[in-house]
Structures are given as C-alpha cells and as structure tokens.
Image 1: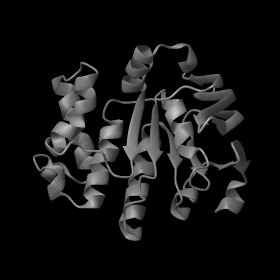
Image 2: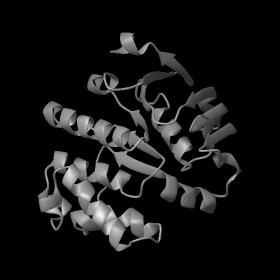
Image 3: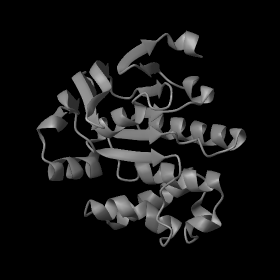
Length: 231
C-alpha cells in the first residue's frame, strides 16, 4: 500500500532582518496509512512548521508534499483549503472551540463547511460525543466545560467529517497529567479504531509510549528514533 504522506526534499526558509532563516532543510519521510507518528524536538525546531506544510496551510520553499496521492505543492491556495476541509482534522493545544457555539454546534461545524449535514451526519456526531463521554453536554457552551472536556470535544470535532489524517499540535500541553493521559488514550483509541493517520507534535513522554514511530526535529532535519529507546 502506498504511504499516505510523502515528504520529498522539503525545505522551508524565511527572510528575517534581511537574512535567510532555514527552518527545514531537505526533509524526506514517508508515513504509512494508519500510523501514529510523533514529532519531538526543542521549541522552534520546526515541528509546527512541518504540520502546517503537511496540512497545506503553508507551502514549502522547495520540495514536494504528497497526501493521499495528491501533491499539495501543485494546488492553489483555494484548492488546498478545500482539500484540508475534506481530508484533515486538527487538534490544538488551546482547543480552538468557537465560544458562541454549543458543543454540538462546534462538532457540526466541519460538516457544514464541507456542505454536508444530513440526518445521518448529525447522528454520527452525537455518537462521537457519546464515545468521548460528553453526550449529556451537547447543548453546553465551551466556557462551561473543563479543559479536559473541551479537548475531548476537539478530538470529536477532528474526526466528525471522517478525515484521512488527524494533525495534533501539543494537544495535551494545557492539561494536567491525569487528564492528559485520558485524552491521549481516547485519541489513540478513536483514531486507530477508524484506521486514521495521526501526526502529533508533543513534548509529552506519555505520547511517545503510544506512538508507532517517533521522529526528532533538530537543525532543520527530521530523524527517526528507535521507538523502544524513545520510550
């Protein structure tokens, strides 16, 4: 089976104060379908930049990024946006829930953006809320939820439109250790059950223990680590 994600000689640099700042340098990698991949590394090492490139939010300075056989580097900005809405789910450190929408409305938002909100879609969304243990909070607003509950809603929202790939940027960085572990176990279970790829940036050692493969970002390079040693 072909890899879901292929990075081919991907580089990314920025101009800063008249000088070129290289964030990524000739990165090569291939991630198989269904894998849970963890990216580790120091702050500023390029982990979040790599997520932005894989999602099509940003474009590389050079090289090619393939997701599900689609070359993101050959798409227009509008085409990348539409691809991202259909094929990618996001989970962020600070949840990024819309405060003026209820839990259920937040969950339905990706479906609305994709122009699909059938009775079956709504039922699937409610089922996801049940799976994350929040069916009884569907009419609550985000500010009435704990941090762990908000992140569980964010996990459900990332999966509700049945994406090929889930990208998570420090999803437990704002949670205490016990809540963090609960959210991680939930995310791992739900993505594996659905056969999704999960690409996560983290500093948490708990996440490393769940990953299929671990990569370290350093000096613009992406290096795979021995997952047994990383644990």
